[in-house]
Length: 401
Image 1 (tube, one colour):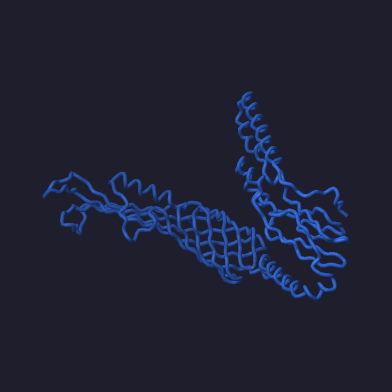
Image 2 (cartoon, helix red, strand yellow):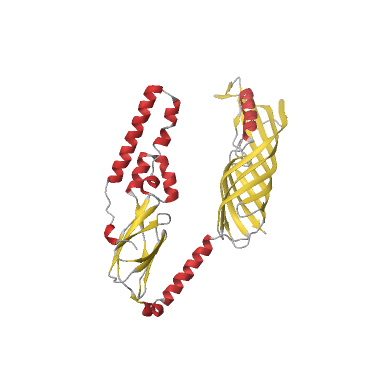
């Protein structure tokens, strides 16, 4: 039983502000004194750790709620932080800050039924100040929801009905609430059947591991012949590759998958440039020669892939993955020189032609920082963000068997 006389309503004040400011002043003084004496790099490296206080550390992961009411008998209160049996009102209980908005506090007694207390949340003053003074502390505060406080921390309750009447009057509401809660739990839980085989098809965009050698070849021809990107309608992203791939993954358990990836990529760009001496004719200055160049890059990737699932529900899947394999890259560049003609036409036969073609092999890698798929248990759409041989952004569909 909780002694209600020792618990008082929570009053918001500025004591936490004084704690934060004192912490920062002391930490800065320690760093300044250490740096003045030793002038060591380690003193500056200690700065993030000495200033890493955050709302999670200062105010904790639980919030206090004051409950009072016109009830003469002991009640049982159930919150997200625990169960309080046979307590007399007024009393103080604790709730978890995580998922604070919409959280229910259930109250019951031997002879009476009560409506649930539904909590709403506001931004915590202490959490906002911590984020202002120490920006990086916002990350753990978001994970623990320490930046939130209950919008109301004091409640006065009255019985909704006697227990006998409540059994019949509120039975329909209770059944609807139970069905809704079961639906929410089912949505949050992973699918009951673990589909172990997964087939994927996807396309990728953005800078990739193959861009470096492609751009190096392009720069070499730009310096030698003074050509620049021509902007032809069949160009693809310049030095960056557009790719398409197929994947297979086998799920070992709820968290770990192993599989293989095959991916093809292409990069194509047209280039043009002019060379003097410039000839003045009919009031116009025209170059003597025109250069037309074409770059074509092809990349083929194959390798094993390991994936870790860090959240899964019935219709969503969030994960990260690592791929290590081989990359075969075929690079080619051709350039032709034509006499320049004022009528806009060009001779069909170039007076000079040159080309370069080479094949390179290297180890390929792809780090997917975050991937997510949405849909049914059998068919889903997915997207990935990462870096390496498959590009920055990947979009595709997956089939689960």
